[in-house]
Length: 192
Ligand SMILES: [Zn+2]
Image 1 (cartoon, rainbow, N blue to C red):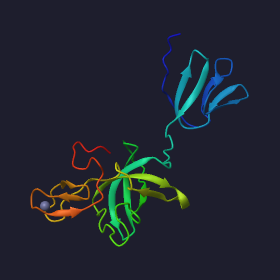
Image 2 (cartoon, rainbow, N blue to C red):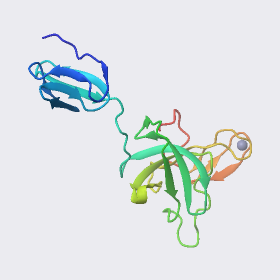
Image 3 (tube, helix red, strand yellow):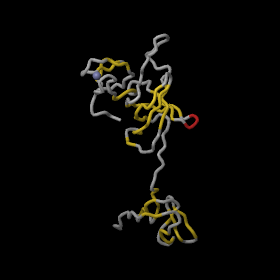
């Protein structure tokens, strides 16, 4: 059997085959001898197992605890920042996710010596998802690989380079800025 999995677009209820030809696979149902599509997607025929199924057109993308995301800081307050998420586990996402980055209690800022500016609006940050309570994507950068991966100089707008673990510097104008930098900050290409 050389039949290649044919990709035909179907919508729910479309007739795919008769049950003498194929067994109903994923996302299909047997409607009195007719196999129909349960979801919109593309038809997949498994000739070996005589099974027909539908691959959903849109796989729901779900962000889970312990995933990592990369996005841009849109607004920062004293204890949190809003992050527009552009990458999910290193892959682009077009889902318009936003997360809330917790800045409180970042390690390295002991009592009385808190880090004043871990992130700034416009920064690109890599964050860990640590909670999904109340439907909010809660993010943290409190681990070495997480933090700012790219930022621009607040003075002249050129990309900042690594200074030391908590400071980024601008070679162009000499400006030094405080940040919680990811371990690979300052390397290119930037890994989302
Ligand atoms: Zn500068």
